[in-house]
Amino acid sequence: MSVAEPRRIVLFRHAKADWPQVTDHERPLADRGRMDAAEAGRRLADTGLPFDQALCSTSVRTRETWKLAVQEFPHRPKTVYEERIYEASPGELIAVLNETPDDLRNVLVIGHNPGMEALTEILAGSAEDEVRERIDRRGFPTAAFAVLTFTGSWKDVEPGRATLVDYWAPTD
Image (cartoon, rainbow, N blue to C red; front, side, top):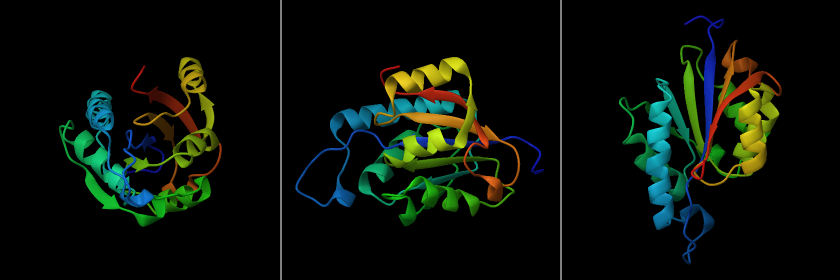
């Protein structure tokens, strides 16, 4: 694949988690979270994007979100469970994306807030107006996702390099 072809990053926040007496990393999805994760998977499948790879935090809620969402996909992408995504800052998330091989075109990141929302804001140098309005109005609730495009190598992912082209949240 040429680095001149558009690439896509989908930033997907885990679905609604429950609050049992476990560590934060071990928190499972709540009932609503399981429903929202499946719906987000249907919406992601509806984008028609052929995902090459999913980078998923190792937390229980992100793994459960991904397991439910990917069942809706026509093709299951390679999944990499990445410890560095848990509680990652935007800079740490960019470092993970910079390691993506250039033969991959569309990458999905399943992670946490505030990292997912902040990274969306930082990467999006521009946005389609109605998409920007929706994300500004809704924020980045659980099970929301943002689709960004850019051209160049994954090593070139940096603030302002992408365009925000789509956004979905469960109440949209």
